[in-house]
Picture: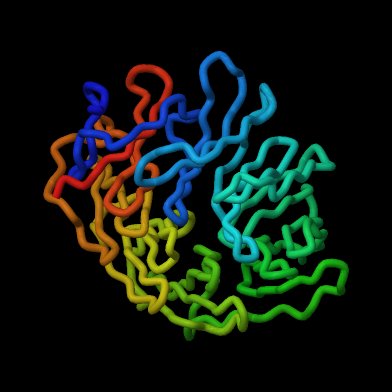
Amino acid sequence: MILPNGQNAPAGWLEQAVWSVEDVADPKPQVDVRDGMFAVLTQPPGTGAVEVVVAGARDGRRRWSKTLEVGEIVTDGPFILNRDGKLIVFVATPKRLLGWELRTGVSFADHAFTTEDASVGFGLLGAWIGTGGRRFYGLTKKGLAPFDIPDKASCFGTIGDRMLVVDSGAQAWKLESGKPEPEPVKLQGPKDATPGGVVAVTDEVLILAWNTWRNVALRAYDLKTLKPRWTTPSEPRWEAYLGTARIAPDQTWATVGNRRVDLTSGKASVIAAKWTPVAISDGFAWGNDGSYILACDRSGELVSGKPTHRSNETVIVVAGYGDQAFATSAAYGTPTLYSLNRAV
């Protein structure tokens, strides 16, 4: 199938789609890819119900789907997260946190919220429920457990039966449900640097930004020991680093601002002078330079020459798998998700 008229593939990818998924529930959907499968939301016309669909990343063939209650909306997700060795597909609605095993579709979680102001957070360490105060609920090996987090701290998921929280002063806690708050661990920063906030958390490391005079460095801390594992060089003009991290599904590399970061060593390099992160896969990342959609490979090198179609004429890249780019277009009504192969 060819992309709709007026919608073009990003430079370096073919216009011919390998497969497509119709009736995607959002023009720019959350699409998560792990272990050769992807999860996306659809809403078939006339049903009034959202479906959670899991399909094969190579062939687009549906493996299973779950239909939510009519009128029930998804406020976040789907996210595919590792919980005790199992990959789980999570979504949040205004009233529930739901999860299913990626491979089988068997129910893993169905937790109703007990307060009107409850909210759900997701990270690579799992999902948690906030209640508008200091009380949070985190998914542990024993199920959903309550935690009272320190004032002005933020939750970043659970490690086993403990909840990881960090405050703006680079203090970290591993809280145990129902036990007194332990003394915080003061995360060691580079010399003469001040903490700039959490940039990302993976299954293995917590990554913080540290500010020196006009410069920024990232430092990763081992989740088991909270000791430094690596530090990027301190560099000027690390463009818009906070809130822009895109972590590859295999968690070996990421894009942060306009830089590519090796998550095993901390080696960092500039991708392009202007680069707003758009999406990432294990093999490629996509960014917007303000006019065009650019792509780089996992080494951080740009993979194609100057694009010919501006970003508003290009399908929206949302994820990828191998050499494939997953992109959406709503040119003729309901959004459709396409898989595009590399052109070279």
